[in-house]
Image (cartoon, rainbow, N blue to C red; front, top):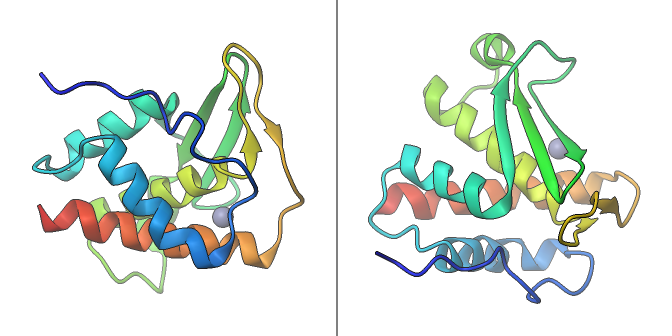
Length: 146
Ligand SMILES: [Zn+2]
């Protein structure tokens, strides 16, 4: 049994910057002990430790992050929209993981505290979207490397 670390406790002290996106992906990879896990198990562990609930649904975008009570987030993915997306680069299952990790990236723009509802640090911005893309691409790369 690997030791289950708490989700990056005390390691994120300010709003993430674009330059730190790859480093944060590595931090998540290491602190969740993802080495050797396949994509499915790696995602399960990220959701478990990060307190994310994943589900499919019909939404406006391809994926969405919703903050919930008790320090939890919901990640909703619209499988049909991802399947229909024109600019896809990966097979559908990996596109879903990529979009989900992008939403995990957005969670770092919230202030989280045990048993409380996450609070947003900042407004949505293009920089945040870019951060989440770089974070997701890097973490997916690490997970697929095995
Ligand atoms: Zn986004």
